[in-house]
Length: 106
Ligand code: SF4
Ligand code: F3S
Image (tube, rainbow, N blue to C red):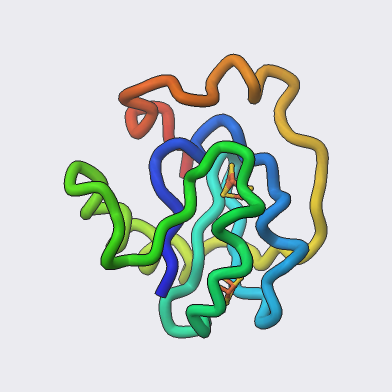
């Protein structure tokens, strides 16, 4: 499955959800995740993310391995999202900032 990584936090551009053929994105307050059992590995979402936050699970940066479990866990509790919405007004300021996991809201 594909995995949403750290740089989505506080950016949440949501371009990814529009292209997913199986609607497997789930939305939290400031982060999106992919449901690993629903993703069909089509790779369409990966180039759509302006924050380059989406990875094939075997291409996840080593320091983001834990995002695999985080996607699986949160996809079970968050609501499905299928339509693009406005990103947070300060999304561009957060794009590329390191250590954003501490800002994750559940
Ligand atoms: Fe959806 Fe395809 Fe991205 Fe998986 S890889 S989340 S199926 S767009
Ligand atoms: Fe997040 Fe990128 Fe989608 S920032 S919401 S994974 S377009």
